[in-house]
Image (cartoon, rainbow, N blue to C red; front, side, top):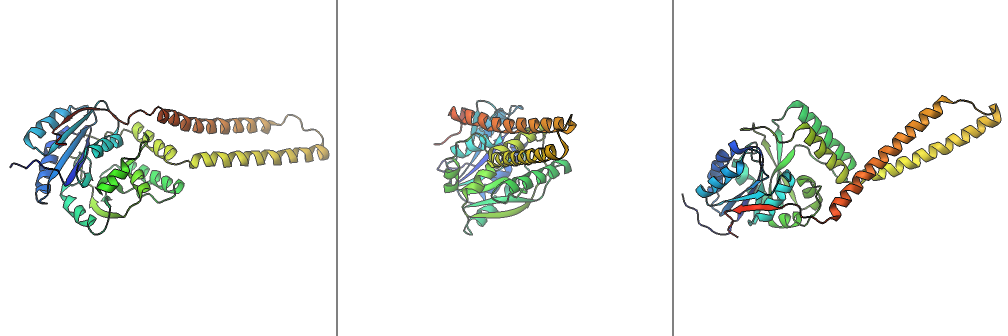
Length: 314
């Protein structure tokens, strides 16, 4: 079937990493679904330097399906930067963001599109059933619970990157320049009228998650430390508490001196010194992490570099 080359109304942005085996089935299901909507569309695959040579598959698919646009980054930048690259490339008035592993069902896009036109600016997919390990699900619940506690708004851990955005939401997202970014956190900050669509998170069609335990921990720390300044506020509060505790200790020692005389060889003094030193080092470490991120941001380097674009109609 031939598709006319024209400005798309709907763009689908898909970061690709470690799921080459899913791309053919994903493309077929997307074409079947989007063709029923009777509106011009484009499918943007962003190759985040996938280790399984997914770019070769993307180039082949583009020759078979004219509406595919392939974007290859110069190196691996991470999922959220890859999403940003895709959003920057997208031309549609409505932009779908989804994963490449077929856990986000493409057949829900028309339903999300209809939901959006109920008066929303963006629609987020909420996973009522999640196909992750129990350990990962539990850790995710704890993480998002903590993020809700330290943030000024509640963060729903069942919501993923599967979403549909209007052009004004995309344009707002692209105004963000910080390197330490999380797709959903930025959407939360933007506000706008948000709808939710419940769906069942399907089994991964092939491959395995690119988020190892180490990467998940780094991603979690990035979210906790660099999406909020609460930790710096807590450090200041802790400093005042320690100082106040020290003042009370001085009063107590003066009282003991006049009632019991000079105190000798107090073992607990050593414990207090070690404790206070540990607190100081932790506080310095946290502040150092913030300073390091400020240093990285001050370089004003681009968020990503594009190596190749294929199928671009702009």
